[in-house]
Image 1 (spheres, rainbow, N blue to C red):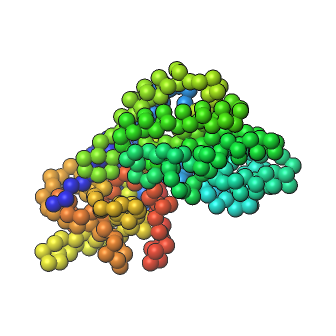
Image 2: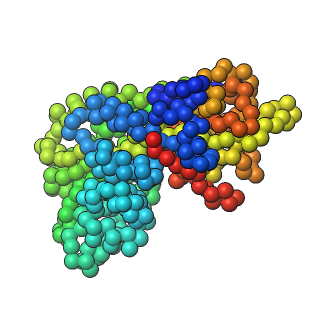
Image 3: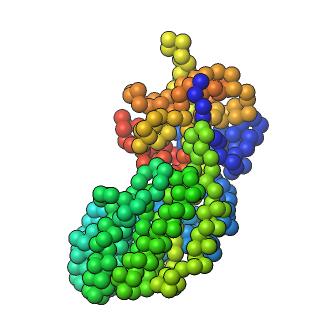
Length: 408
């Protein structure tokens, strides 16, 4: 038997069945018309935002990193809750505008921005987080052609990183951002060229569950921002401090202590140097806001025994839930939180393997968990599916196509 990750708080049972947003899983599937289906809970997103607002200093703005989940209905909901949006492509900009975000609420990061994306963002008044001196040159040329002053910030590749982060985005050689030793010179150049200076973006890593590590890196970010602002010779208008807040996916993972993080940040804000006194601060979060609010529902289409091992074969798989299959950066595969949605409160009695429908041994959704007896027609729930699920998985693989999605 292999353990499962912890099911997030906020789910309940109705008539013995998993309920999401007060609706039974089977009813949601019936409403959607089919499985596989991603369901996102509006109430759980609200609760997460309320907890975060209460824990963080009032001065900090909260931005949503839409790469975590760009589903249209969810994005419209986030537009009502957050203070800004971080995008990474022209396609995401179009989705953001459709969802109701204003251009001045949007910042655009990511290496490899195309010329047409730079033109689009500058024309609209989006803040561009520059990733290199060459990108700065192209942005200034685009702005000159358009006859406007571009809103430009610099994404910094700092010399430090976020300890214990699942994915490191700073420190050492990286395709992301401008090395910190080169930032001040570039900032002076773009200010001299007539750009509207929008400050710094310092993102060091993601999926950290160690509050002390996040407190440490936030302190380092503030120190570096102050140092660079002195070198630039200009007060800092805006600082995107990045995020890195993680969620529990696996057995023995524990929720992040955001109260300690907020308290430490509030203390730092009380002792800022003069160059940061008027700065607008933001944190950029994706999975922390929406990850635990999503569930992937997939129906069992076959039950079989092979060499004594029981397999529950579903109509879903890694083409929708690449991360849960262990194929999205995981070194050692471990089980996400999983349940039999249609037998949610039944006692666990058998060890099974849950697989998807794809013709590859990589298509594993749960290895040897102890679960209630399930059969063909039952619905499996994969939790922590609100981030990096539908849009981060190869839905076209083997012609399977995308899953359905709904916000309830």
